[in-house]
Length: 241
Image 1: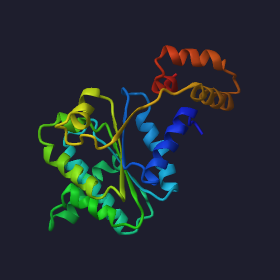
Image 2: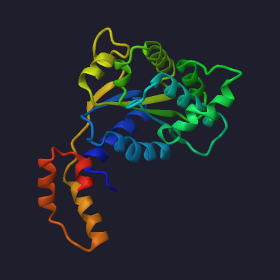
Image 3: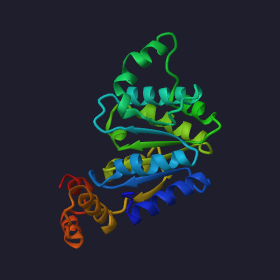
Image 4: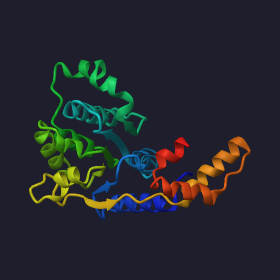
């Protein structure tokens, strides 16, 4: 596994707390390219599914119409649960064209898609708990027409927090503050906030071992970690190198 000790500890802490009902939501904050998305998709999602969660992932980054895309993706996730889909992990980014195109349109001509709050209630009716992984959620606060979606999301998660858990991530401190920390923010005191940890030497050791396995060339692990430190512990740059 490429899971560094800090990341493994964070994964266990989050999932144990959510599964045991200690809390129902977390917010992870770190600059972009520090590995938050990979953490959600490669560490959190598979282990959450192993522990019995339905898992939904959605990124608000670079979405021109986040209200429409998120509502449609969440609706499709709810439908996949109700139809007994074998795919418990729903990665909306993979099927964005389907979500916005014929796949959803055929089913929604006769009946409008329910509100976000109503969709979350449908998700909560499943006998398995669900985990929503909402990436770069601060982008919602930057849009002018997302107030209704944010309020409906907060309502749905509030009502169903026993069955629907959430991990939010964000790279903008100001954007996250606008959603979570200001006393007038829609998600004020809703989620437990954590700083996303820097990856440690076990991450670069893992990369060195993979490199040696594939090329039969040995890397100096201490030198590789010093390079990682000079790159401000940014995993994307190390993977590229």
